[in-house]
Amino acid sequence: MSKEKTMKDLQHEVDLYISQFKEGYFSPLAMLARLTEELGEFAREINHYYGEKPKKTSETEKAIEEELGDLLFVLICFANSLNISLEDAHDYVMEKFKTRDKNRWTRINDEKME
Image 1: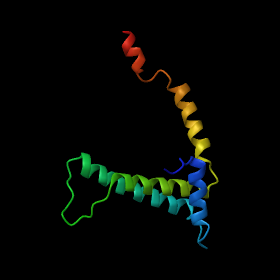
Image 2 (image 1 turned 90 degrees about the vertical axis):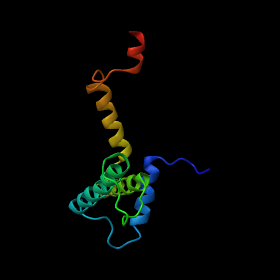
Image 3 (image 1 turned 60 degrees about the vertical axis):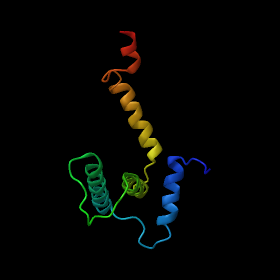
């Protein structure tokens, strides 16, 4: 069984991969275009699995997991190119949700008390 990777590990692994090429990371606008393209491919797979649009017989089978992986890779590239720690970004947004949105949703434990 392989060791679980942290987000820092993932960012480092992607950086090692990209750093072997002279071209390096794409520009932020190109990265945004790639992220949008991958999001579209992910949306298409979700629509095929859970929506009303079945795949054409000529379309190859792709897994949702693969499309999520593509999205994650491009997102990590984007963060790396801008020197952003995704762990820090995650911590920031979780703190925001825990404070700003702390009473926004019905907690499971609150329903049991009624």
